Image 1 (cartoon, rainbow, N blue to C red):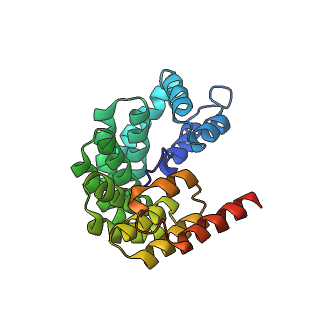
Image 2: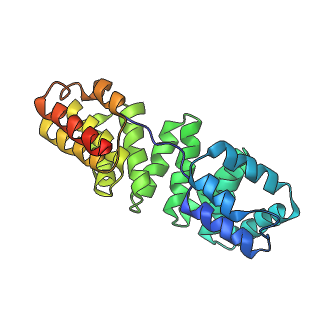
Length: 237
């Protein structure tokens, strides 16, 4: 099985543009660089930039305006405020804004709130919000719901429909975890198919694939070895 790493949501990127709209100049904060660092999943650097920005008058104004717009039931602004507070490690405020975003119908807000609960190891609440996101066809939410069920609750069969939806949405980790589910359920052909889908989408943690105990039922199959060899060669070429 594999876990999803940090990723910046679209809502926060929109928030950066909102910050620019609210009067932050390139000299005060280079939004291009912020976006590059955050989108490249460098969480520590992204957090450091926001910590600096939050202490400026423009940063405070940014949070106030997003909070005010959230009070007017603008769901995207709720999500933006929630993510910034999460980056600033103000989790009570983050959860408040993310919850409102979620219940206003923003699937990204549901996923973000689920992530907060997951970091706190409250997997029951995390699963609730991931499923709520998945119900709104948020593929990331589907993958995370399946991940919680598979990894943390050991409910392998229950994870299958969520990971199936994630894989159909071309989520490579969803496909890989679906392969693990199929292997654990002794559905060997399906496991090989799901694994190939993950590899097609760019999954390339070769050592992990070869040693993952969840794939034990297929690791000695000739077709498994052929798959690994095929995609390793494609990577080299």
